[in-house]
Image 1: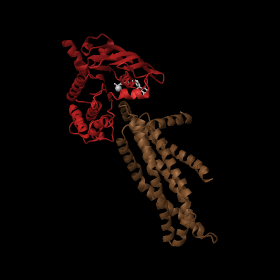
Image 2: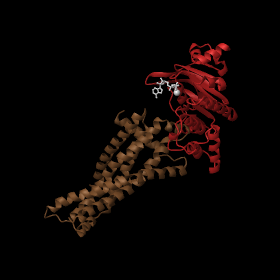
Image 3: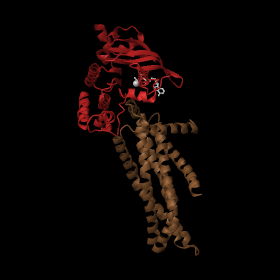
Image 4: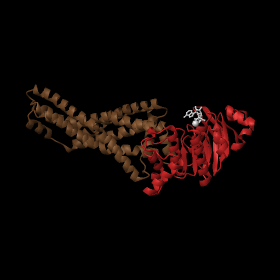
Amino acid sequence: MNLFEHIGLYALLLRKTFTRPIKFSLFRRQLVHEIDQIGIGSLPLVGIISVFMGAVISLQFAADIMSSQLIPKYTVGYASRQSIIYEFSTTVVALILAGKVGSSIASELGTMRITEQIDALEIMGINSRSFLILPKIMGFLFINPFLVMISMVLGISGAYFTVVATGMIAHEDFMYGVQMDFKTFDVIYAMVKTVVFAFLISSISAYMGYNTSGGSLEVGKSSTQAVVYSIFSILASNLVITYLMLL
Amino acid sequence: MIEVKNLNKSFDGRQVLFDIDSTFESGKVNMVIGRSGSGKTVFLKCMVGLLTPDTGSVLYDGRDFTAADEKTRMMIRREMGKVFQMGALFDSMTVAENVQFPLDLFSTMGKGEKKDRVEFCLEKVNLTQAHKLYPAEISGGMKKRTAIARAISLNPKYLFCDEPNSGLDPETSILIDNLVSSLTHEFNMTTVIISHDMNSVFEIGEKVMFLYEGRKVWEGKGREIAGADHPALREFVFASELMKKLHNIK
Ligand SMILES: Nc1ncnc2c1ncn2[C@@H]1O[C@H](COP(=O)(O)OP(=O)(O)OP(=O)(O)O)[C@@H](O)[C@H]1O
Ligand SMILES: [Mg+2]
């Protein structure tokens, strides 16, 4: 299959996915389950990565700025904040979640496919796409902004503790920089990215998993492809969104 | 009643089913038999629409299923129960939850009623000790029985079983046969069973269709099968020494 056929089938899958659930009580239960799996399940990973990323970013800025007489010290706070909000907590976290969440969605659906669990749903007269995929997409769309906001807070905290605790930058300088020239629009830009990335990861991975055929080997392949395509789509859409929103 | 008309199916140019015509009456146990690879599973999947036949149609009580739109197909499917060859249990749910699942989605029963129904179905398949276990924690035969309980939980009008008693001991196997047979008569279901088990064919097969290399070569009552004259069918029926001996005694 070529790329265009894939895109066509992907669009078709999405159309069938976004239909009314049969029973809302059941849908709500599934949604809570997905939010728990994806959200709470990814929190430790996202947390650790964010703290360390913030720490390293601030060190890199501090190292450059310390050696310069012209750039004021508060720039470390400002630059750390901007790069965390703009790129690290949104795109880098999304790339990592593409690996974690994407592969788990694809392998779960792939396994259900090859063990005929999806066929069993269809035989009961259930729209299996809507039943299985909708809660995953909605759950991830809902929880990813929270994950990203937590990542931002932890990232900036990591930066603060690294450069302030070691005495490289004074508390006042850092705080001044972090608050300087703060634009709400930057957060909106970050949130738009967050929602788009969550949609891309969950829907592309669901597509790859749902269309698995064969055996356990193919489940592995689908989940690898899910990660690869999710990553490409994140990189491409990141470029487009940034061009459209920041320029 | 289910009517199959002129059904053909091929995969990538390799034809698997050839011009199959048949009628499966309600209130009767219909069986499809044949060697491994003869196309039984593919035939059943074409009937229920999991595979799309190249040509031909399947009619459920006069309603054309193959030509129907998505919505109509979904409505007809809610009247079906199917036992898959490998069980196809939902592995994120326990045995009891698997059986309750169709009730949760499509019944208007209250909590207590559902519980009673689950209990009733699991009792029918002689599985009363495994409610809280997950599919990964039960044996192959128990999976089969759970799958049967799930298939009958909504009292389907059409019941399909792909080798319901393969992998079961003779005693449980007969129990399942009798269960399916009595449910079929009691609720006037149209039952289609794929089987390898000659004992089942003799005991409960009210109508038997023999598939040979994708073609229907014999059709008749289960009890008539020993007297059938098609060579491939005779070979199939009398494959075991025991059957040959029984035949000679007769
Ligand atoms: N998805 C598929 N793609 C290609 N060929 C297939 C597919 N499914 C089945 N076949 C082929 O169709 C033929 C019939 O297979 P089928 O599964 O119907 O056999 P069966 O009669 O159910 O055998 P068994 O008793 O072993 O279950 C086989 O030759 C098989 O290779
Ligand atoms: Mg088979």
